[in-house]
Amino acid sequence: MLTLRALAPSLALAVATALCAVTLTGCARSEELSIPEVLVSPYDQTAGDALWAVAPLRNESGTSAVDTLAVSDLLVAKVQETRGLSCVPINRTLAAMRALGMDAVRTPAQARALARNLGVDAIIAGSITAYDPYDPPAVGLTLGLYASGISGMGQGPRAPGAPGAIDPRAITASASESGVILAGLRPLAVVSEHLDARNHATLMDLRRYAVGRSDDRAPLGWRSYTASAPLFTEFAANTALARLLESEQVRLARLATPPRRQLAQ
Image 1: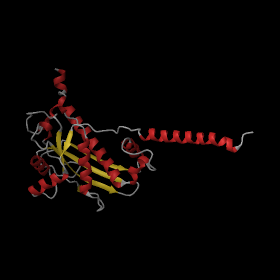
Image 2 (image 1 turned 60 degrees about the vertical axis):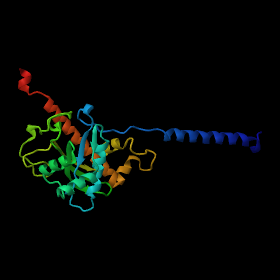
Image 3 (image 1 turned 135 degrees about the vertical axis):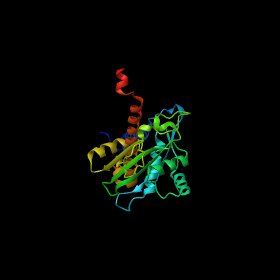
Image 4 (image 1 turned 90 degrees about the vertical axis):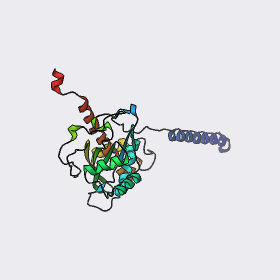
């Protein structure tokens, strides 16, 4: 009958083997990475990236808890992350606004003047319509995309030497969803999003967005985005920008499609 002393070497070897296996498994798991979903510009990238700017968003949420510049900066980061787009820093936009004597962008004329001063192809202007930083958080954003007119972006994909005029079909008198009074010029695209973490559809989109951006081994995992107001606002900025790009892609597709009467001929 084997004694405990005789079994000791075998037990020690078994424990060491188990510890080694656990360590190797942990190391292998720590190296597993996922590619996050990325946004892509709808423009022809053969001429290089289109250059955008973001005007500081106005606070129309009814609460003073929101930091409008911080949210605007998150939106700048999301534009910068988009393939085929570049974005000027928010500090440069603020400097240009001071030079033009603007305290905020309230009209399409101001948006276009600011975009021209910055030398960008287009500028995003809009407002924060809702903001609740407590779990479950909620963020509302309304964004409009305005062409500067210094490139051919209003008429279709950006190209070298394209005419600087805005698409004439975009020149109408109406009001945007952002509450900006349009003085005879519509934005290229407008979106309005309200993202509430109580909504399961929002949570499903959030969980998909968190893939490749959060650590599944962390205690909260993807739920860290509902526990953190800045992280949830980052998700909201990405979602609103994605809708804006989708709307712009649809507009460009319509411009590229001949009228049905011409097709019939």
